[in-house]
Image 1 (cartoon, one colour):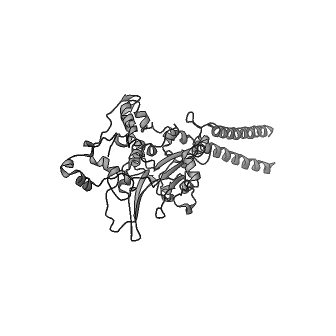
Image 2: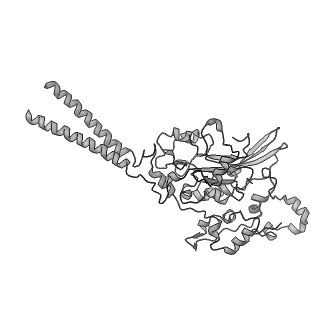
Image 3: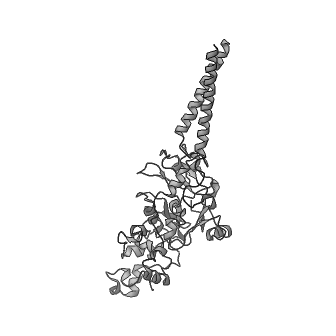
Length: 250
Length: 158
């Protein structure tokens, strides 16, 4: 009887040690990588924002072509696109042929337009984003520098986020069968470059900046000028800010 | 004593379940998951290194094409990046060596993307209605010609 008791005690002690060891092992793994693994890049030193001046856009589609080339976006899908709004009291016409990639054709809208303009669109990289909330596997997330991204290894392609995004910024990539979206060219901005769309924009419509940099022109514009965001009533806190956004634009 | 043995059995089973849970969790939850939130932190670095930047910007083109860059900077196309017409620099040169000829598109379509008069463009932006341009210049001056036969894209004068 004494023998069995001592072995039982030993066993319980062993089990407690094993359990404790497993816990330490677990916490050890989660303490492993504290720093941003991208070299010489501190993600807490940046908080990105995007500024789109719709009054300058000429609808050339350079941004859409650059985005597709830079990120290998499949044909027929767009991480960024340009829409044309032709409006009057009598009617409205909105088009975006091939996402505006090849520019826009002349049109006869069938009414006398009183105003017309282009609106470049993309992921708004919202602070309170519905796409991350609905992801069942933790594949969608927002980085500390303010970029909403998709972990292709985790994504199961259920498409919840595609439906949840009120701006239509996401799609299921037919090649990878996972959710795909604008990353503000994270592979560029972490190296100090501008996103591809901003790099090629010939009119300065698209601007990219850092809200943590005091002399940043985009930060100054957002802080001092009259800017709007898309669908503010949804309270998603978009981080793409627009100048000259019309009430008809959704 | 007999009852105590039952208690030990229960504790034994519970401990076993705990160990199985902890080990299972370690195995199922990816490394770096949950460090900063419910996502795999390693993906941040993966995204940052997902591919080499393809567009280099006009300044990097000037490294080899200094003359063209000077001409461009002096004209009205100074803010038009080379890559708008010639495509991404990463497809043309890698590590200072030319890997492929850069695209040269002399077509009307290329100029028309920005300068054809269509609904939507800001009114002050220079736009051309081809029919009016023909009337101004005389039909013989324009027939069968592309814009670039008269206009230098690196320094277009009106």
